[in-house]
Length: 475
Image (cartoon, rainbow, N blue to C red; front, side, top):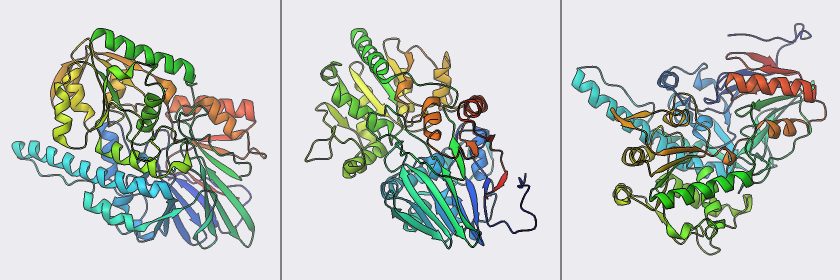
């Protein structure tokens, strides 16, 4: 482990520090150890996603003893930030998990679903292993493990200061990314004074269809900043919507279907809002629209119950339903399979957003080989995922061991990202008065290097790209 030490510490004990244990020089797997006096707090506990070899690292031991962790602070519900919490609890963590109230509600849906998927994946692997005479594998954790961890969650309002362990408090500020997503402000107070670490979490965009802009923060001693889109600018929303309209028009003229791999939380609700807003303008009355994801349906209901946190105009005022008269929300496997009979005129929104699992893979199997069909990519696709291969122009894809030719047209509509782009990140940091040192996380190397260069030149910031195992003493 690399130890970074400040030059002026002398022999004084370190009382406040951060150690980077995940999402370093990659986008997923958020995990940071905060030492506050005699206490250990985890900031995030996320799943590593992407290539098979990357995901295999989830099965390795945590880089610290879960029993030694006193509390967890969570910025938002996405699995790359929350997905290893059930494993942490199963291995002995016994403290509280502090996060925004809406994030608690979303984790109550997403974590058990994640456990179910791990069970199903292990079952599928074990069928193959049994045929080959190999030993069985165990799921990373089960649905029951995930349900058991939920009692440890403690909901906190935005802008409320909550003590996490003695001397360390957290304040959550709206990050504008998804429902309940937060910028995390950690303040440590001891006899030597007050120190403040601000973690951006995942920041939203200035043009988000639904969520509010990220909260502005003015004061910090250190900043940990995401950098997913640190090397690019998103297309503006007007051009994005024009492109979306054109894709829908072309698909109707060609007599095809439209498949949209979508993250169940955040992106799906953006799409429902945009479809309801532009229903007549885009000719959506001519389509059958399917939301084919039980988790996305449940998440949409959570959005409906928390309308005070965002622009809720796309919901009917007296129900949980979006304003889309031709929307069918298909919960059961039988309802999902019935969509296969739709050979034209169907818009199918299904998880997972990177095509790594879920019902979207079944729809790709049934639609990818027809030239009149369209696949619309509306979110970030991590290296090694099926979604990334489609974006990169793959001519064939493999699903359940069988190869399929990609004849459907693939469109990447980047302006709908829920992540801040380079300009958003630079603007957000520019609000800090004292230009605190920055540590970049959650980004691939090219994105981080580009953002670091801009921060140094434009904001005169001292910037480091966080390394795995690096420890920074916060003075």
